[in-house]
Length: 119
Ligand SMILES: [Zn+2]
Image 1 (spheres, rainbow, N blue to C red):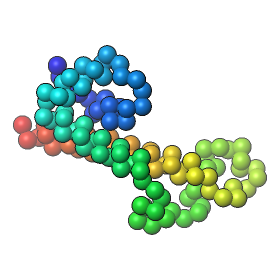
Image 2 (image 1 turned 90 degrees about the vertical axis):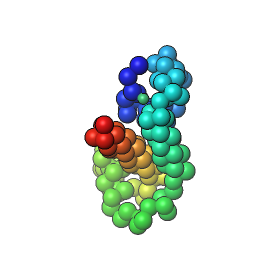
Image 3 (image 1 turned 45 degrees about the vertical axis):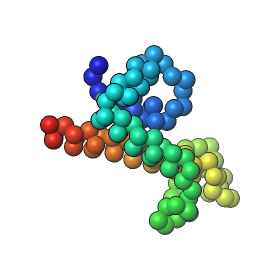
Image 4 (image 1 turned 30 degrees about the horizontal axis):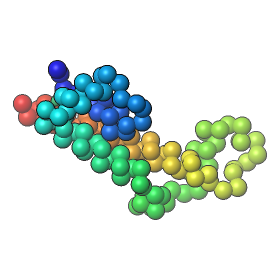
């Protein structure tokens, strides 16, 4: 079996859905492949860190207008009432999750490229 695709490794690390047949086959490969095993372990750590991340973990708190723009962009119907009275927590969590996912995918791609170059 070929190496597991980085996107599939991210899905395996997220473990959001019930495992499919493809997941089982991929995990079987990961068990026997040091390269895919390393990548899955790294992604699992990133996902675990992202899930426990708090806004205070960011180096600096994003300015209020950033959150207002995000929540306005995601729910245009609130735009007519001006900026929300407080920043809803779930937007922050969603943004953190997206940042973590982007980081995880980016790291997996870079990791794979480095491996391919060294062969
Ligand atoms: Zn592999």
